[in-house]
Length: 140
Image 1 (cartoon, rainbow, N blue to C red):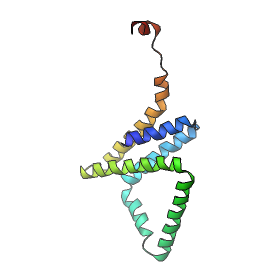
Image 2 (cartoon, rainbow, N blue to C red):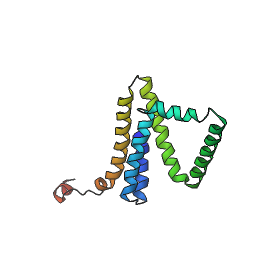
Image 3 (cartoon, helix red, strand yellow):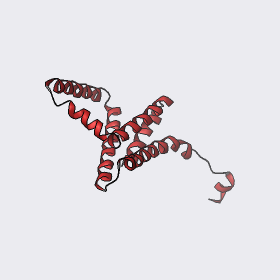
Image 4 (cartoon, rainbow, N blue to C red):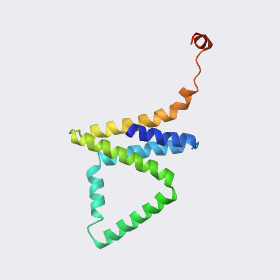
């Protein structure tokens, strides 16, 4: 599912003809997302839980959630892709966790599946426009 989610996002980037920097930012997002869900899970969890330990923390978390909601509504199409990729990564992380996968192996599996999805969507137009040599076409 993670592979397909990243393929869909890659096709979105390709269809809207985003510049190469968008592809680089997508790769950085994938690495940060997979790292946050596997290798750096404890610091990320502690940071989120720290926001709920005081009145100021509650206020900051409420403002952050409200800001996130505004971004989701304003950029609904892009937000759905990011949320879909995040949900697929979380599901894969849960699957790997229940199978007693370590943090490093989970990170490598999640990053490779995500980057494979982006690579397939990036290379698909090149493969689909590939023409067989005329000698092979006449025999088919």
